[in-house]
Every structure is written in C-alpha cells, then in structure tokens.
Image (cartoon, rainbow, N blue to C red; front, side):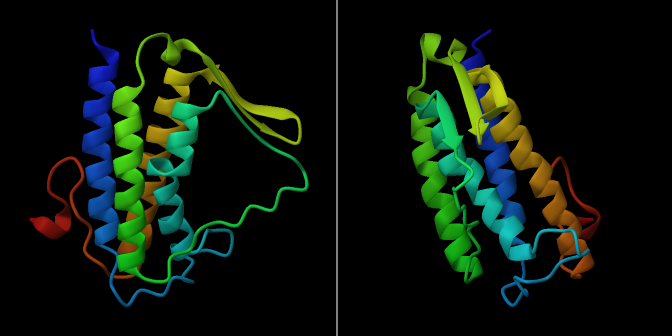
Length: 167
C-alpha cells in the first residue's frame, strides 16, 4: 500500500468538500453569528478551516515541532468576506498540497510535537499528526460549519452523497 498516494487522494477529496462547504456560506452572512455562547463565531470557524490547508498543514509537513510560550498572543483569522475566505483557502491549499506531494520517505516516521507553555499536546509520528490533527480536525470543523449553515437557513451541500437540500 502506498500510504502517501492514498493520503494525497484523500486530502484532495476532503479539501474539495471543505471548499464546497465554505462556498455555501451566504454572501451576506453575519461573521459574528454564534449558535451558542460557547461556540466560535461563524467567521472564526470559517477562518479556522483555512488553517488546515494553510499554516497548520504546512507546519505539520515542514517542521518537527511547533511551540508556543505562555506570552504568545495568537489572533485567529476572521475573514472580512466570503471572497477573501475562499482566496485564503485556495492559496493555502495550493502550497500545502505541493508540500504534501513532496513529503516522502522517512519524513513521515519522524516525530512531530505541538507544545504549549512546555506541555506537549501532540507528540506523534508526522503521518499520524497529518491524518488526525490536520485532516480529521478539518472534517470535524467542516461538520460544525454545516450545523451553523443549517441554523442560518442556508442550503447544505452534500459531502458523501446528496444532501437533503439537493434531493
């Protein structure tokens, strides 16, 4: 089994589905909308989906460790418009996919860590991190976005076949 070939194919399929979900956000959507007080805003959630094909995906493939100190002030990306969101997604996707294709051999077996204030929250082989913390994480948040879209009255695109809105 050529796991890299399979991983690239799955990445292509799942990122296309994620872009389709992002494209379903109404042009006039309120980026501050939250379905619950503990939820991320629509803008933050949509922006977070660009991380997986952007910095998060690239850092997983090109580094062996990402470390943030307690003084680190991370500002999540919140798009100003749907067009900006899709542009950022597409740009990140092109770079991450090219890096994914170029990542071969023993690189996949190297350990990768995510540390926050000295505590390791991820400490696994790069292959597992890319599957779990990049791809599966993206799919998880894409599903959250579908709930936001449903609550906003938007049509939900099918992901693994037609949705109820497409039938």
